[in-house]
Length: 76
Image (tube, rainbow, N blue to C red):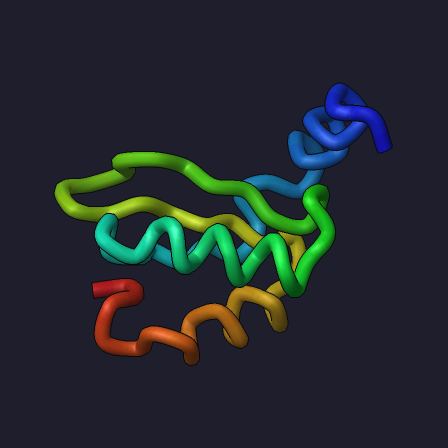
């Protein structure tokens, strides 16, 4: 998929399943997503709250797997 195709595809499913993650762990979250998912299956929104970023997943199962990685730092 080209970058524009990825963008348009994400517009159809977003926000999908969302997971809020502490801002100190954003690089770890992005790294996990890059290793385990295709680029069109997840999205990242910066500074959605104080000390918080939000990851959006097309598939709820992927989001739940992501939440289990850092339970003390997600959705607080």
